[in-house]
Image (cartoon, rainbow, N blue to C red; front, side):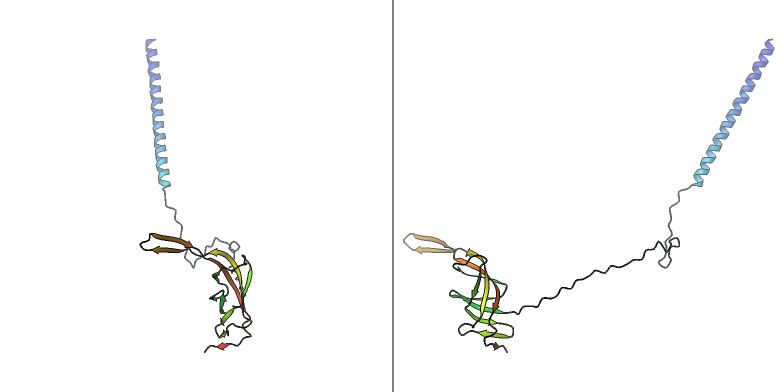
Length: 204
């Protein structure tokens, strides 16, 4: 009975060892298969740079359909030509305001002595026109040009820059420092009219 039990135990241990060897071999074969599959996968999918072939200017892409190409329409900007206004005749005049003479041009302003009873935005006319000149002719007054008038608009009633009046007497300890600002009026010349009927002197 003891011999039978030993034989049965030996047979079971031998079958166990054979089963263990077979499982180890199968595991090794699985590992080899996995390693070979991984290596094949790695070799089969190398990282290659993405390359896009350049097309020459003469070659057109064949994949684009003619319907997809939209015609380019150039929009030309519309230029509005404004009508040129007729240029005014360049003219100047010499007028007398108070006891002073001024050269005036249309569109410019001058400072004169204080004009009494003249408020801002009042329209005034200067009748003492001594001379009127253009590019081609000159109208000289004797002493004034007949029917010639200068139209202007009052813009401001102001004071001129301060003038220092200093008085001094030697050896008397006398000093006087006085400031003065002369009242003035700024007028803007709008037009010069009425000189066309008077005789003119043509310039050479």
